[in-house]
Amino acid sequence: MLRGGPRWAIAVVPCVAYACASASMTLLNKAAVAGAVAPPLFFLQFSQHLTTATLTWTLHALGVFRLDGVSSRTFWRWVPLNFLFVGMLLTNMNALRYVSIPMVTVFKAFSTVATGLGDYFFFKQPLSVGIVGSLVTMAVSSLIASCNDLEYNATGYFWLILNCAFTSAYVLYMRLVLSTKVSELTGVFLSNIIALPLILPLMLGTSSLLPGLKSFVDGGFAFTAVFIMSCLSGFILSLASMWCVRASSPTTYSMVGALNKIPLTVVGWLLFGAQLTHLGVVSVCTGLLAGAWYSAAKLRQHDQLKHKEKLQTAFERIL
Image (cartoon, rainbow, N blue to C red):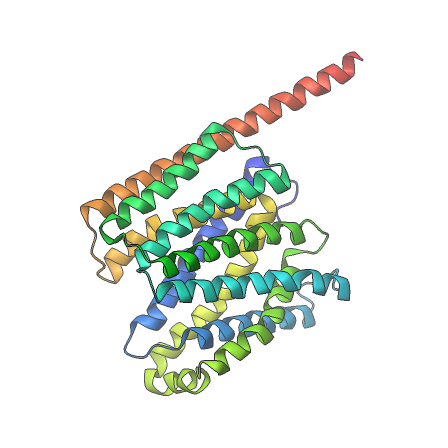
């Protein structure tokens, strides 16, 4: 995807695609669960994975693209990624039993910092002062938005720390498996087909199947349309996520995800009547500052790398 274009386009276009796909998915999920009829979480999750796996296989069968590089070795290499994903879901759900949603948001912002550190130690991605500063500023942005809802619960903090660990490990491991010759579309198929037997016991264990099916009867055409669009957006988000991680880095992927809260805050205020407080406005402005700082730091890092390559080439010519 996007081979041979300008360097900035190769990195920026996947990030924009991921940001748009992530925001659309969030809004569609919000619309699906905000009405009088709300499908259970694991039913919605299972449906999205099933739709994505089926759609990917159908496109392969029709010859639209090929699922290349699929082997037993590749399959087992992708299995841990889905265990990490399920770990993210379960730790997030357990954390929400003890702490508020704003507290979860704060800790998720700190997981972006953890991902940046992991990116540095495992993949040797350089961490400049500007990049570290922008990551910390993003965490501060979440802290500002949630300062009125801060609370302490030892059990809740335990699950939040675990959730941060699973979130960072998930993104970093995705980068590892995508460093092979497997295409993004093949990765989408593998991750979603492996996820099905992991999500199925959770869906059945929480008795989510019958209420989920019943929601189509109670919700009517409008609910069904939103639900289908939500499932289809799962395919686009899966593809955009892997494209973004492969084209940029786990740190950039996490930063884009954190920045998505800004347009979602505004859209939530306009469409769903969410309250926009003074602290919320300050948080949005701080988040914008963090995003601009991160972009400037990455551009400066790119220019320094380009200059270093030119010096190296000139030095080699002299020799």
